[in-house]
Length: 306
Image 1 (tube, rainbow, N blue to C red):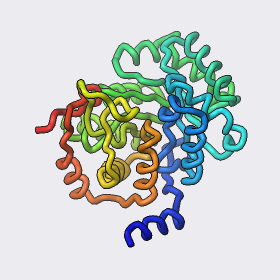
Image 2 (image 1 turned 180 degrees about the vertical axis):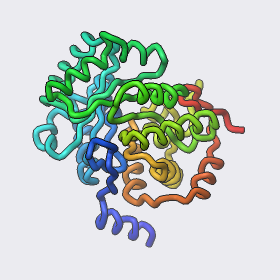
Image 3 (image 1 turned 90 degrees about the vertical axis):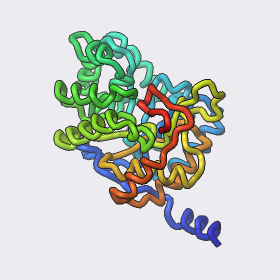
Image 4 (image 1 turned 90 degrees about the horizontal axis):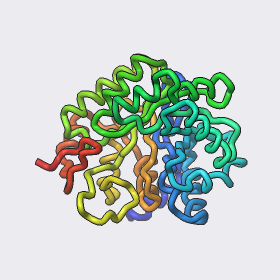
């Protein structure tokens, strides 16, 4: 009976809820398509993954040059979907000249004239932020992109324990349209990270900045173990655990969560997103306390289980 009920639900509702992405005016699905997972699979596998994403009516796609061959995998789909999606691109280059080279290469690889959002990517240290935003830095290339109509909006992304503090600094020095940084119930066991992330979210709402959060189902790190998933962190795998992890993320005052970078886990994430129910504060705290990372992941601020 339960299996029949779940199948009926899948037939009745495949679409996801939407939220306004800050000042952009874009109503993004609560889970967006983070394309890292299709960067290291065949075109056939990528096609099946993209079809699944489109079946769920996801309307926001995030991509980067560092995601293997993700641009080449998405390229054949662009002619039929470009008008239906909000497309976010990235550059991890830190100088204006290098960033422009990567922007042009991204346009060629993906087969697009322009993006909706272009982001400074993987800004994880104060040095990264300074290089990107100082005179001659990559931010100048993104501003020129916007001036030339090659992107509508400019954002910043990062991961690591310093990400929230760095993005607070970034928002106080430039009028970014969006941010992207990690949160998960497992990460929020770290009280310092939680404090900084909550402060960033509050500032973003004050400035009407779009909030994208990554590492939705991260539970810990790999340590010396051999990874059995394509994510660089150890993710939750069971449907019930993924439900808890994703519902926790989506119960925070954020706008969209780019999906997990593993095509095998993506169907479970989309199933959880389709059935999303907002959790009470008490339920959210319970899920945090239930996190027991097998191995910590310092690069995400995930502490050892205590």
